[in-house]
Image (tube, rainbow, N blue to C red; front, side):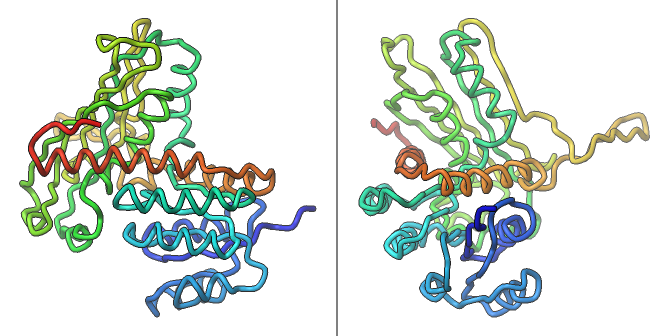
Amino acid sequence: MERAISIGIVGLGRLGKRHAENLAKRVRGVELVAAASPLAEERAWAEESLEVPAYADLGSLLAHPGLDAAWLVTPTSLHAEQAIEVLEAGKHLFCEKPLSLDVAPCDRVIEVARGRPGQVATIGFMRRFDPAYAEVKRAVAAGELGRVFRVHAESHDPADPDAFFVKFAPTSGGIFLDCCIHDIDLVRWILEGARPRRVTARGTRVMYPGLGSCGDVDTAAATVEFELPGGSASQAALATFHVSRTSHRGYEATMSVTGTEGALSCGRGIPELPVLRERSGGSFAAGQADFFSRFGPAFLLEAQAFAQAIRSGRAGTRSLEDAREATRLAVAMRESLERGSTVEL
């Protein structure tokens, strides 16, 4: 049998704990051997729940004996710097999205990765592993929809009466980088080879006025015009994005794609359970609580693909370059929102 890939995880917040439990208990061919967090209570959780040593910082984790890879689930503001540290330590890298709050740090990570062609570097766009989105990608690539000219993507986070996320908003990069980055990546992935030409974005801030202190919004929309390979300006693809933190029906992520020969849509109306309750002359289905409910299997498939890439030696910078372009589009959306005008790319 092949030796298990030894992985250390950095960051043990809500998402980090889910990743850690997957790596420790549910992903074949890997072994979670260490964890790191600056918070004592998170380190105590790792030592008790995962039965692994817990370090206070990334540098200490990278020195753990026999470590093959580091899995970063840290604040976005730290991603690029920490990714470089992992690569320069000779370890394989998994980093949660987005790669950075701006484009220049992405370029620095890519430059370092190019100098280390034997190391896998992956950014966590796990929606690519969701069967529904994967089917949309397959159908478009096979030409089943004809020439695609319209894509619409939506991501809705449940309304939070405690506004817990507001305190993290100043370092999140804004709603497009924080909440829309998966949709941006998916649209680029599905329209492979398309070049974005211009971006227009608008937003509102009604339910969470506290976001005003950092210039963020709670609901936003953006339009991106893509130039398709070999197409004229009149044959461009139009992509629209709607993102919010104000959903009253729970978490939802959807996409529709329209072409000259047909259309596909995915993700709409998925309930938490396949149960429909009827009472008082109406019917009720519970919506999904969060993105774990919707994309739990995708997180597992993503981790399995990372391990397989390491085993097969499928290194390269494609994932980093895709992450850079997703960041570039999200930053352009943010700039358009701030300026109130279209941004040319």
